[in-house]
Image (cartoon, rainbow, N blue to C red; front, side, top):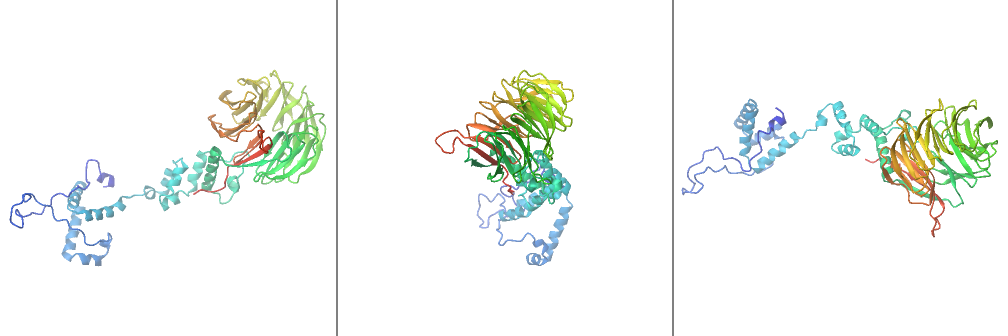
Amino acid sequence: MNFMELCSPNDDISPPVTPPPSCVPTSSSSPSGSGSPNSSHPRPSQRLRSSSYIDPTFNDNPYQLATIFNNSQLDFIRQIKNCFQQLDGQQRQFFLQEIIGVCDNSQLLFVSNLISPKLKIDFLKALPIEISLHILGFIDNPKTLSRAACVSTFWNSLLKDESTWKRLCNRHQFRRRNSSITGGSLMGPPARRLNFSYRDYFKRRYNIESSWAHGGKVKTFYDSSDSGLVTSLQFDDEVIVVGCDNHKIEVFDVNTGARIRTLEGHEGGVWALQFKGGETFDKERLLVSGGCDRDVRVWNLTTGRIRHVLRGHTSTVRCLKMKDKKLAVTGSRDMTLRVWDLERGVLKHVLVGHQASVRCLDIHGDLVVSGSYDSTARVWDMNTGQCLHVLQGHYSQIYAIAFDGDKIVTGSLDSNIRVWSPTTGQCLATLHGHTSLVGQLQMQGSTLVSGGSDGVLRVWDMDSYECMHRLAAHDNSVTCLQFDDKRMISGGNDGRVKLWDIKTGQLIRCFTQPAKTIWRLAFNDTKSVVIMQRMGGQNRDEGKTVMELHDFDSGEMCE
């Protein structure tokens, strides 16, 4: 019979407040011989307080037993024990009830202390390890697991099992994505690391997510020089690279915000830049920049030295993309695109066809897509320089383009977004909703986010072409946006930066203090960089361009 059967609801075996009357016969008269009002009722046996404490383990000590009982008493106790073992469950309950009923308080306390530890059962310890770990695998809340680890040494050892934390990492989608990730050795691919701990990895990622929601460490760096308009921004786990219209490219340390170097050489504003490299097996960073001086410059970002000056464009270089460290494509106001060999520093192809300035371009594989002020987009073969398709349908200039290999998306001054097939050149869908210029586009997986001069962000499902969320984000034009699979950050000409939940469309928080305008922003898993112009005022720091570095990874492991 188990404990639950013993304590079935139909059997009340709790001790009475006062013990039942003793079964020992008592005399009918009082010792004084005079009548008493209580003489007709049997009195309970006298409650004797125990004179000394008896160790519950004395049954295992025959010498101690010999000092308490004689042989006949010990034989009598053994007989009672044998008789008790022969009783059925109901009989045993009645027997115990009778015994407990004649115990005084000290004896009841002794019984309570004796049986309490026997009723405390660690169910996880009683089960096979595999089943215990399977049970813990149903817990999604990490705070619950942390509390459980404090219950006992055994539970704490169970919760050090890596399989539990690996499942929790998967449930919380704490997996390494293709986007750049910083934060030290724990943030790299597990297969490439020895002694990797999913438990430590989960704790770190959980703390990072919490910091994103509530705010991390913010460092603000004031630029003492006249930085002017910031046109471009890119950063990785070591450097921040900023292009400005004052002819300069500034390189900062991503951890301290300190200026590492200034790249000078352009004779006009820098309007586009991109770098590749800086990875584990490719430390050297190669930077390509272009601007108003019509030159394309190739830099060794690690040393700051210029490698090549690529000339050929006859007007401002407005946009560029690197396929890798060997090839880059630039688009210009001279209505052409040019494909450059970065290793040799020579021109490979001139892509001619647009009838107005080339405003935007994107690359996927060997295909280049471009958008122009002539209201058309074009698909080019990078290897041959041939135009494969002309995408016609917009009524005004194209300002933004995105290409993932399967679909091309264009945003135009006509307030519409069009989706095209790169294979056939046909228009697959027209997305309506914006009321002004669509100047910001980002596509990732089946999600497209667009930002317009109407201050609205729209999140689109690219499978159904439906608008999932309409966010009245800013009071003026959306100047920059970025999203990943969890969150989205937007900046506007209203000087606001806002953090959104990409899945629900809910505003998480205002990301920074209000500014005059937001130039550029970028983020990865653990850091965010925002470049803005402060509001003018009496404060000497106001009105200047500043850079905010938000760090959400403290690197500390909470216990």
